[in-house]
Length: 330
Image 1 (cartoon, rainbow, N blue to C red):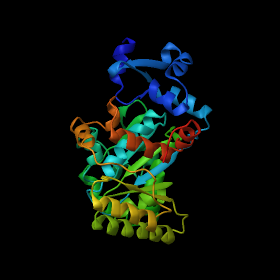
Image 2: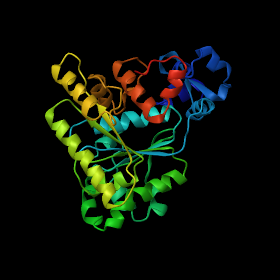
Image 3: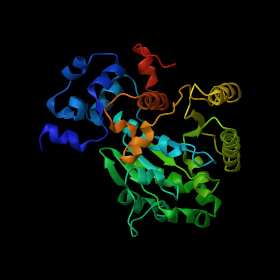
Image 4: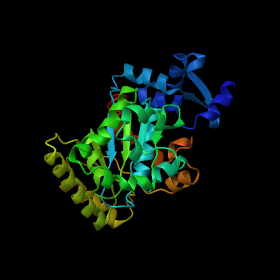
């Protein structure tokens, strides 16, 4: 397989142009430091950089690749959790983080987004949590290089019955994450159902960071309040330190008064949680999902890619490089 053919096998890969922009250098400056095996030709006539090579560059800039567990949580449905999960995962992978998504939602929207629906006899989280050392690595499905998923199906709806014991609730997701960490994963993203069940409780106990996506309507604010209160309650019940809680404002439209009003309220009431990057409304998300991919599979520039890239840089700590090299992160 030649270099060009290999490029078509990698849907999610950072370009030399993007890496140069992040590192504050020129594209030629990046290419001069690469050998032939570290880059490949990709769609759009661009040069792609393998994740391991991106990691090498970013480590030189002080980026920490210690494993992070990020849970996407909101008690309200239809709030953008799947979009947040899949967009964060694919961009983190492009930035050199070996990434695995754990789909805990019985509806399996994240699983469907990557066309990774398991066969009837294939295990999901419901099957593996009691024997993670034996089953986790045989359960994960490969989406792309360094990008994997533990898929979901309707059987994950039975978790509330199987995780009755509080110690199981506390440790089930954490034990699975520990196996992934031991196998070199550096970013673990947990997509949760829109309910306060045992899946969410166990995810909160495992998370380093919890991202709460929300919209501008009153129901979103109600869901936000309930979610934050329940996180406090879960951590208090298990006598645990609370994870970092961050609010991601999605579907922002500056033309709508409701969006501006919601933005002001978020900044005033939830300033310590608020992520200072907004995800503007865009048709790019639905177009990507129709193709069973995310916005980061496209080489075209878009507001959707720009917004999620800034958010992911913030979550991964890459924005400090961007700021140091003259980028605007406000």
